[in-house]
Image (cartoon, rainbow over all chains, first blue to last red; front, top):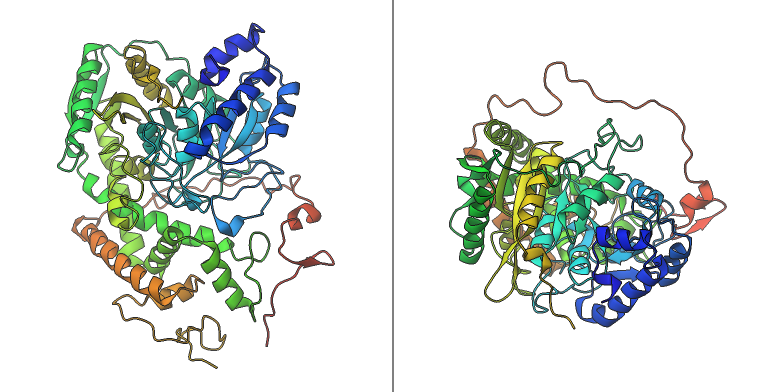
Amino acid sequence: MSFAFATIHELRKQLLAKEVQPKEVVESLLDRISSVDTRIKAYNYLHPERALESAEKADVSLPLGGVPIAVKDLISVRGEPCTCSSRLLEGYIAPYDATVIERLRKAGAILLGRTNMDEFAMGSSTENSAWGVTRNPWDLSRVPGGSSGGSAAAVAAHEAIAALGSDTGGSIRQPAAFCGCVGLKPTYGRVSRYGLTAFASSLDQIGPLTKTVADAALLLESIAGADPRDNTCEPEPAPSFSTKLGEEIRGMTLGVPKEYFVSGIDPEVEAAMQKAIAHLEGLGATLREISLPHTSYSIATYYLVATAEASANLARFDGMRYGRRAPGCDDLLETYGRTRDEGFGREVKRRILLGTYSLSSGYYDAYYLRAQKVRMRIREDFIIAFRDCQAIVTPTSPLPAFRLGERTEDPLQMYLADIFTIAVNLAGLCAISLPCGFTRSGLPIGLQIIGPMRKEETVLQVAYAYEQSTSWHTLQPSLG
Amino acid sequence: MEKSAFPFLPETGAFRYGYSVPTVAIDVAYVAGLARLRLSPEEIETFGNQLEQVLAYVKKLEEVDVQDVVLAGEEKGFQNRLRPDRALPELSPNEAMENAPQRGSGLFLVPRILE
């Protein structure tokens, strides 16, 4: 079997035992990509020569030595494009490495390529990409989720051993759920955002997409920790996230929020959740109903806060210092207007408009300020809930992967699909999504485990206990 | 000169549409001007309708009692975390300009600002 199908841990063993050379691993992955990526389109950009060159020099004694990793196309890698799947950044070459990239290099990882995404991370389906849609490896007529859909599809289709994504409202966890892999959104401040193209700075976090829970812990260990170049990063060094893997969850109390089991949730998702809850009880955990009373306000809050921050962050894309500039304009303002009109896609424009509106004179208090206050209520809900439980279990998404084109013309419907992931970002918590079943038609279903701030070890411990006592993670999409 | 669709930006002469802007309750053309986006009439109409829907939806936030909420960063005794003001190795001027759409004599060249 090709080395492309290995997990990080399996590959590390083989590399250390010298059963395989890093170069062979990269070649295996490049073969796999060339045989399946014309159907999936997970990658925006590959640099095979550079990956093979890094493989030649790889030090397998390092924590990720010789392991090829794919990176979402909004994280800066020196000397490579960073398009954010936008025409506006066509031709742009990043002049520096993001902190997470420096750390991946230091850990010995091989950078394989850049994965597709919704433009500037705005979307839940990877359909808002200037470079074409990514397809779900389990059903090519369906979306992989988003915005890190390319990273999730690459991992699920074994076009990468693991990948980095970013999560502003669910953009790691929801595509992980749709594609049947593991996605971890770390606590706000856990991972440096230096070199991550900013969408909503108070919500964005970089995190791993992997084939297993143990791989997610290992990859997070390699990228987390204080960074003087990102002042929102926790000043303490990150702990070892793998320490509690394998510890039993007997005696642990897990919360099940009653507000998350409402009408509108797909019956097959709900049935899978009930089974997952029963399974966790079988492992000795106590499941307790909890209440997060402000849940129904989280989407409205998110779409005001995130778009306001986005409208400010995306003001930098003006065609002056980098990126595309509309030619033949008479003056500065026409250049701004045409550059941004021609460069940005529809969803990005829509969100910039909403954000600009909610920050504009006369509307600020009614929209943005109120949303920030409701956000504090949502945060308090979790603080209170975590007095009675160590982690919270929910579905990752109310529905499995939907069909391509099904929701593109109804933004509000698209936004509503993020109902279970968004509150985690608003409250700055950590959460993981892992496979917990399949629909009758063979689509993966994701289980989300939410932890308090800085409790990744707990979330990983529960996820690992569930994963190791089930077999969902061993199932593979049939792509030939 | 065509009539500006942006009464607040009349002097610049930018964002000229040269057509009548569709009427929606939210002045999308005005907001687009603030955001430096030059939209087509079709986009103004579509986005106007979609934004109205989204804004109608977010109205539900008015139901929440936020009277005594203290915002993050406004708590008593809150202190910002400041970093030492120290120069660190950064991009050279040449590296910083590598992606410039237009450059010359070590400077970014930009369209004319003054008439």
